Each structure stands twice: as structure tokens, then as C-alpha cells.
Length: 81
Image 1 (cartoon, rainbow, N blue to C red):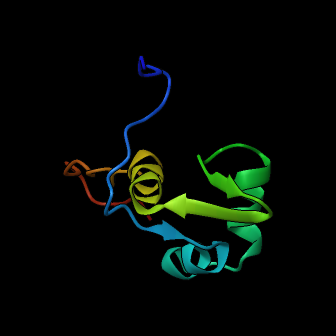
Image 2 (cartoon, rainbow, N blue to C red):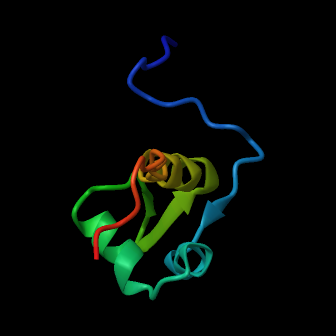
């Protein structure tokens, strides 16, 4: 049976999180991950009426949306009054 190249390989030890667990890890209410799912901004697995997000997808989402700090250059002169 040929493998479907569009399918992602999954690790047998991959953990799938509930919407509540994702919200807890992000430090938000459940409404935020539900909105991400509704807007298709994060990959998810739907099993019947249950929605799950894998830990690796959540980590990738956090990594992709992490903003690096801007390193301020040294000012040559002090601030003007």
C-alpha cells in the first residue's frame, strides 16, 4: 500500500492536548485556542466531536509567533529636554 505523501508522519509517543490544556499552556482562556482552530490558524485533529492539538504543533505555533526583541543601539547623545 503506497503512503500518502500529504500525510504527516506521527510519532507514537506524540501527546495530543485538549483545548483546555492548550489554553492553560498559553496562559489564555479557552476562547483563544478555539478561535485559532475556527480560523484554521493552527493544525488540529478532530476525532468525532473532540478536538485535539499535538504538542509539536503547539510548539511550532509558539515558535512561529515569537517576536525577537529589538536591540536598541547606543545613543550618542542624551535625550533632549
